Amino acid sequence: MIKKTCPDEYPISLFLNGRNLATYQLTNQDLEDWAIGYLFSEAVISSPNDLKSIVVDEGRNRIYAETTSEFDFDRFREKQMNFTAGCGRGVTFFSMSDVKQFKKVKTNRTVSISYLLKKRHEFAMNSPLYLETGGMHGACIVDREGTIVVREDIGRHNAVDKIIGYALRNNLKPEDLILLTTGRVSYEMLSKAARFGFGIIGSRTAATRQAIQLANFLSVEVIGYLRGKMVNVYTNSGRVLKDVNERVAGDMN
Image (cartoon, rainbow, N blue to C red; front, side):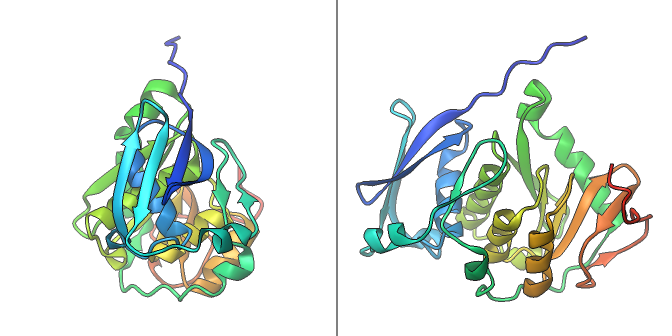
């Protein structure tokens, strides 16, 4: 039996305009991508252009972000803080009712289930931290040419923030991209994806009932159990061509 190394996690404090927003458990990799993605996902910024500077201080486990305009920090902190479920515990300031105010997602991209399974395999083979430790989450974007980019983290939501940050930094259009994740699609994961504008989300595991309700409301296609030869298409936005078998109700193991 080959022994794998243990995954790492670090407490990273995010400072916004000189004030400590919160401390997060993160994998110490691609932290600038994470900070941009997280600040965007929480509506602190609308684009990287809203940031005057961002500095990662790995020695002190801190990230310093400064916005180009004044930010009402106290009003932001008055919002209810929701702790996300799962490993690498995160924080979101969006409630379910907040997410329902997002714009509906628009994209004309369609894909087949077999294509998603193929890209899910490529994703797995290009996740070095998972292959090294066996205990890491990942998020992957697939563009229209089939090129993939992967980001990894101890937390599934952190990995999604990292890949969103990468896409924002590189001016990628959400309507051209598919999001794949190793983690469960819960409401806060769906909210991150919907705010960026992903029209198709594929997960290796399940989606929650709340996430599916939001996905249907915001016109996001969600596919679960993306592995093997059977999957579960939870939604009906018409973006996924069903060329392989779907799981039947109750067959979720």
